[in-house]
Image 1: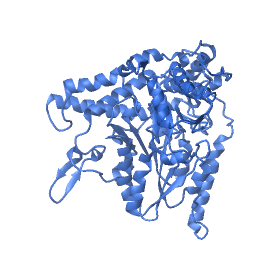
Image 2: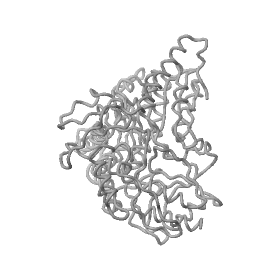
Image 3: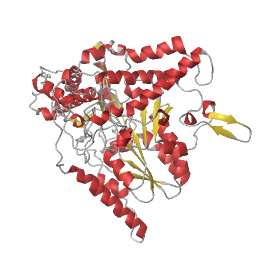
Image 4: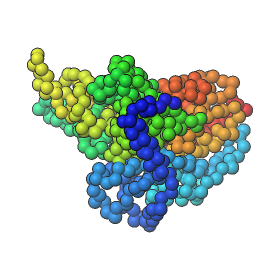
Length: 550
């Protein structure tokens, strides 16, 4: 572990003591609060829709929150940024939901695990009406039900690509952490744009240009609401998470990070949240620091706090680790970093399809995500940044609508967000991404999360009864990823075996080589669940693996 040299620096010592106090304050949230949990309203009396992302996410009380978000009696809520900066969820202590009553899988002993209704829902849905419904369903429903009445068959019907056979078997898509499939709503929205509205945006006076501009900017507003940003101008369209991180590194980083400064990341980052910072460090003489994780793949928060110093200029951290499924304690990471005066970039590529997001409540400085991870098109994503940060950042690329006026001596740039959107953007992609957000909202992030966590619990339990199968990444707080190896088989051989059964799972290092090497492996097989996966899909996966290990 690297620690700041404060022994001969009174200012540095004072700074470090402030960080240590912040750590004690944050970890003190683990002590049970005397504040009573809110009483659940009677069914039918709930005043909020069961959608918990963006502004609506503030109604879901985080576990271990010092300042619980109040339930308002009416829908007339003050703006989120006027309320206490409390996350809509907390990535801390976590109990996976109870598995449904399992159908026996050939060659495996029967399940014995049971859990009470309190364990049947994800941590960020506890003490909500949605949680109560899910717990009741888990306790009383028949074999392999959808949690809380979740209709997976109806959802599967929305995805045309799933209605095919691969190698003589029904396609089971378990490569969702790489990319998700697209519902009819997204395909139709993209197709309709090209069929009816296709035009460049912002500059022309004709009708199609106006319609295209309205569709593009309407999508921006949808994304603003999806992540709980204060205004649409804080949403910058980019090609995806990778481009967004590179933009921040080359714009904010080049302007604010110099020789001897430090950039702090974690061991379990995707390459896209490592390499841009390495490049910046080489360009500027900065130092890249890495916070360690334990043997379960969980961030060692005290080590992270110790690495914060007066030289730390940015923290960039994944919310959900793509190779392991670990949910990082993003609320505490931001609190500790801000106590040290350090801005935080949240990589939400893997959390955005699974967890409610609210950047205002989290007080995230930057947040990035990719459209194709949330059932939208490829080649589109967003960078969120606080207005004052984006306004101070120089453009990263030049050309197109980001220019207000040009002479050979001087160029004047547009304001936010156009300043960072050089060239012709992926207009149809943005429209499709907006449709994807609409689709997710129609189901509800809480319902999706409860279903996926039930799948994860069910699959994890069955995997423990597969001899020679080792799960890589066993964090208590985990999203719907099972990364594993099978004794005696290469990961590519396992993936090919699964493919022969129509099961699409990823094999390789998942663009997270340092994360996997922490666990002594170079590659794994990764089964990652999405909103359209079912308990039958898990049974098929386990049965196929059972043929290898029996």
